[in-house]
Image (cartoon, rainbow, N blue to C red; front, side, top):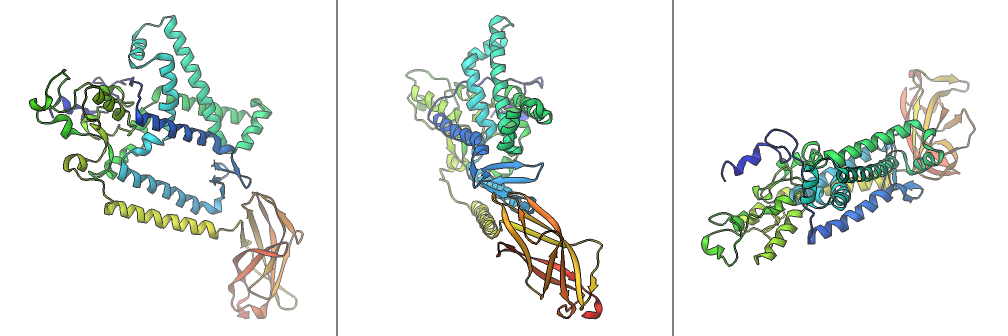
Length: 472
């Protein structure tokens, strides 16, 4: 490869020789993979917009309320006490993406990433509708600001802003809950100014990303692209150019009708640059796997279309590994993939077990800080505790009471003996544990307390009980 051809390694594809932003005007893609991507994208868009409004057992299907530290994942509520489960879920997600990256490259970015789906299947399609295809967009960008250009720009930017506002509302529904968002909308925006300001900030961010920053998110901001250098190897299946077939002995050459390219030693690549023109990040896939490539398959569809027109076999650009192109080796489940799969399986098993063993009501009973024991009549030792009961369900837990399970003794509440823990809420209070000194074997030992609802044991917890050393 000549020095001129190798210059792509010196900078990213969206920066020109002067170091300024090189605006990308990709050609409108079409073809088999693009149709598949549209189906996947429409399904994921419907899922994204519907998830905050779907309820399972009264719980929002997906919610990430960071401010109140409440999370719902697939209808399962997670409280601050379940943070370890949330962390394991996130680790599983990261390893799952890493596993697919090792096996299939940046396929997540091209097919499932919200940034790519919104950019290519929503905003870019609106741009094609208003501004036209690649050639028309370049012409419109270069022409002076006349009436036609102003009308198109205002129309496009207005639609972009409206869509960004809708995305911001859905994003807010994930953060604060769809019920609260609907209530705020009904109350009117000026009744909740702080929420309105947050909504406008989100709208501005989304508008900036999709109207101006665009593919730079994938190239500059997203850390996942940098992971490719660590995760990919010669066995990873990526969107790849078959340089063995495309270059042959004497390299690429423009197409000439009735020419015997094989006899002249030229490869099947006719150097039409259509794979470059259709790329949403502005790279030349023929230079090999690059940071900017999001595996969107637009170049595959475009190259296959050109190959059909010149009566050459399709698949010059395709899903393939470097070893498949160079050594003709098919995909194998390598030890590296087996290791990732084993770790992923173990973590999923651990998470499933923890979810299965998790109680709907969690109890924490702790001795009141700074308080010792109290010695009462009849050799009774009394300790004071604070309790916190977290109800993780969408139903009230009624008739709640406490019983001492490990020792003979009594539990007395400061409030009424029976109380209710509201749905998806907590109850706090103070209680006293009284045990005869004869039943206490040490100055500090563990006692077991049961939590009952209408006489049915629903949770147990351990806490410390203090007594005088003389009674050991």
